[in-house]
Length: 388
Image (cartoon, rainbow, N blue to C red):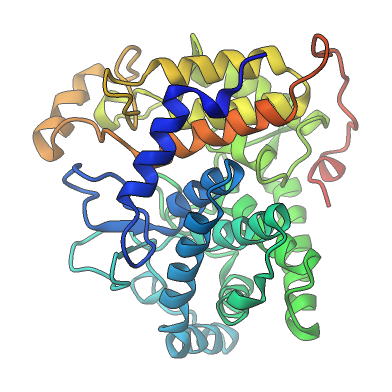
């Protein structure tokens, strides 16, 4: 049985991420891509930290969590203002909400960006708790930042905002809701909140699940945004590793099926139908998320195939790209983005981290005999499938 986390590509991934992590603890999205240089995202960084944590790089993950905590505590007064204004019925404009990305020094930056995104703040909460459980670490060292984040999300979770891809700010996105709920569930289950905060977080998580049941599913599967009929590659993360929906439930099975049939070609997963960014290519990190979902649903063989496809996108220098152009949805749009920002981001640290994360899960669940892929969905109830 291969050890995925000790392969040359895995070793390169860990070394690359560690070497590029800044003195402050931030993870650069990509060291050379023009639109990303100088910035770290809470969402990308949280998943990068989780990948590093899962492969034994605990100190690196904690340095990132320290950076996140410093960014948040430096903005404590602003977060208190956002929460107070929202509770008073005066929710601040998107431009006044917390940004999705920060400079390595923790600043908001001067570049215009599609900044109001909530998912990263839920993801960092989830990643902190996952790491703390994995390595028996006291998450209390980040308690002030965890409390601030919880207040911010409880006050704001139902607002439309940009999705993972910095698009469609007019919608409430199911992947965003999954990140928020996963983060709130994690910190409440870990006992990291006081009584009032814990009650508010549990109420918000329950409300998110009711809303997704009512408007975030169609024909039994999760959808891209509330009221949509489409799916998005990011929905795989709602199943695994976030665990917002049970991968073995009817909802999980139907969502995986749609992601495979609508967005995945020869192992490479697209973001969504209609994607035009760099022509709408296939993303290694999304194949890894889908691999995690397939593995959690019981299909190890398919998870291995998705891992192998993602690994196959590495360059001769073992750098993983953001996306590849072997199968484009909108080939005529590719050069418009190349002319605007240069070639596709390579390496992308998030891609490397997701390969590490899937590899770690494949190693941890390696069976003594052939995997049983015949497990039936655990429930036919959509609400029960949104596991709590």
